[in-house]
Length: 271
Image 1 (cartoon, rainbow, N blue to C red):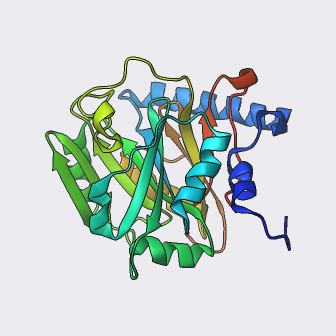
Image 2 (cartoon, rainbow, N blue to C red; image 1 turned 120 degrees about the vertical axis):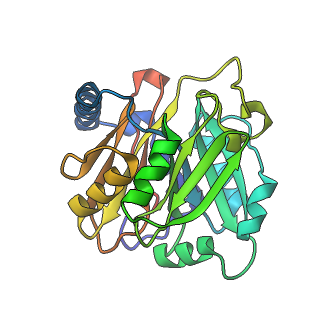
């Protein structure tokens, strides 16, 4: 695709990929990934961190949302007014019991706007992980000497963001929910509860670019309270991968799993 200018719809189609576009090699990679995550979970004992929400930053929120809705079986969008404090507007959409968020700058001088400039276009911005013991996670982050740039607690639901200078690559959210199945940041249907009917698809992993993939994987793993296996981190039901790039600048791919045509894993770069 070098030298070609893609429409936004085409970029997001590449981001999500059609089920027909995935070859045997991709399925084999997913099986190996699933086996890796399963063996890591068995070895570690407590449940691994789970990727619960992935955030994309876009110049045009509505166009990005439209493109994603055309490619993924996403639920009804929720526009969270609380994110206005960061100078952005957003939409959060469920994919099963995980979530895809799109944010766009609503004013000048925002972190989201600066990230867009670094990326040179729409791309991965933040990944939020759910852990079972948020108090232990908070203590671990402090013990590592990692600064916290943001923390919010609402009725026992906690969101902690380590400083992106200390944990680069993408913004990391470490979250704990009072009710494990809920997700406070996804709107009224998910506050202290979960809908009765939830689709089978879910976000399961991401691929991040890094100047030193193994080193960045170790940094993220330490914050999440697990051990990296080279350039990979096992998650509950999935994994993170770190690949060589010119800079630590967001994630280039998301993985999601569903039942459409028996397809398990869909990967494609955002740009």
